[in-house]
Length: 199
Image (cartoon, rainbow, N blue to C red):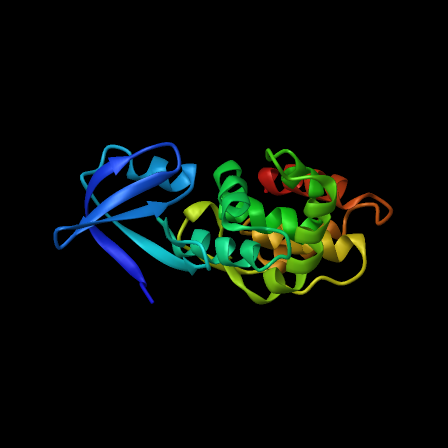
């Protein structure tokens, strides 16, 4: 199993980068976010995922461990292949992906080309528990954040979403406690962010 490749960037295009290691060029299919991180650099290290199928062997490379973990989560969803996973992670950061799953925001996924309503619902449903148990860094900021398990009410979901965005559970709970409990999750998050920005 290939864990990573490090070397000279010898080629990039719309959805891949070639990294030369020991005289061998490794073609890594990747996301727009990773390609953006490679822009202007001569050398790079990519964390990799090797996909072996009957008709192909493909190598996928990512600039961060959070993006790699999000990719592995996505391809674990029935009906989501590597190409669709790359499209989703090209359209959003790992933090935005975690937030969309945690809040059940299917619109964030249907805005990606090739992802329909049923597929978006499947992503949110199948990955909700995995996101709650995993650790994803928001916006590549370095600090890893655990998304707490979600209870079946709007306040709990809103608190979870705020934790994904980097606020402590105490901060999130204090602000959510001031809001009308009948608000939707999305409205709670919006109002909470306004209050937190003033603190």
